[in-house]
Image (cartoon, rainbow, N blue to C red; front, side):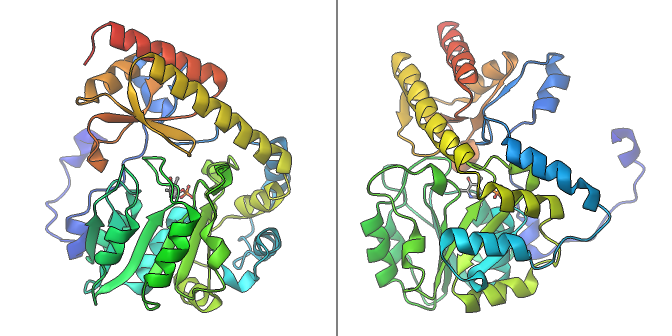
Length: 376
Ligand SMILES: *Cc1c(COP(=O)(O)O)cnc(C)c1O
């Protein structure tokens, strides 16, 4: 592959202005890649906030059952999935936009509403996709200062100008694992002018067990400028299938759906997502497992004398108080993949996802060895 590229003619074509500056999303290192590099097979990947429990038996059975439909195009409107979601969430189907992962929904929102003249507000340390979709459209990213690693909603209010079109809020946030208490959300929505869209990205919603957490969905009927995005990739354990959705005022959903690719959510994904909405057992296990796993990681990290950002996600950021690049590399050599977050301007942190009990232990043991070996 590499040798061939030198034979290509010189390319002088330039992309759109926003694309020229675009640095693509950096995913966690794939297991296969590290296997090839190290020639070993028992890799532990705690780098992408995936569900460590494997897919539910209901998900697997449903996927297999629908494989016979591979020759047919999927249902372009997602009839059954939208109906199941509407029922599950007690909302109208008209409020829904289905996406190829919630990432797709976030991108569609940007493409539906912003031009290069507009400004988009999001917080320091917020999920990387907000900046990427804004940059792709050559619009202006307005990044507000974080407060204790979390979103500072007052700073976001102060950043609003006549050009502001969208405010992206990750609640809880990835990679920091911080969340916004419900009373702050309502007060914030009350103060944002109604011509500005407020997007609450709730990718980790299902894991939330704190008393003072509440989904922004609570205020859907009150605010026509509110969009909530959710995903089947995390607590539902279906990251490979790529299914997410947006919830909004029907008029907003109608606009977004105009640019949606007709078959953006594949048939297997639609069928499996519909089925797992009824799989309360799997979800409950995921939530409980995550709470236990977070506690295990937290305790282990404290024992090692390390600092961390308290998290309500299925992951947490460890603070090494100095550049964490060498620790990341040393863990890789031991077959453990975590996530560097230097691209979030957090060079001293590494993000680790909650794994199985065994994976968590393997990670903690490896981290202890790395630290005892004096890697820094
Ligand atoms: C994982 C994640 C998503 C997107 O996941 P999809 O797989 O595209 O649904 C969105 N927002 C945040 C904050 C995430 O961490």
